[in-house]
Image (cartoon, rainbow, N blue to C red; front, side):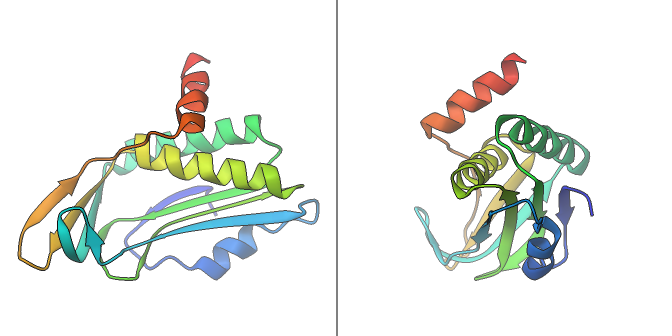
Length: 154
């Protein structure tokens, strides 16, 4: 399987975990982003994701490559949904394996922050009151900013 994937299909979390298992890894960290029922704008009914697949996959692979240089990762998987998603559905899954938990946690956090902040995937919220709005990505995390700056300086 590719390390990065964009799909309209439900994300199979169990298979992603299996794909990152590695006998030299002492830890696997997985992050699952799910559709919640609220936002600053009100009660959310559903989410729709749109992606520029070619550009998004290229950026996701760049983020993964940098993460493997920065941390001693064994395997990485990043899967993002597109299309309409209902409440509770998994919209993004990130799994990393590494020899130690510290590196696995740091890398997973960096990857999700980078995906949310840099990848050409857009989110539209559909609210209970019938309104719709495109959601702008915000990321104020200091580690994300520092690592992104370093990655872009290469």
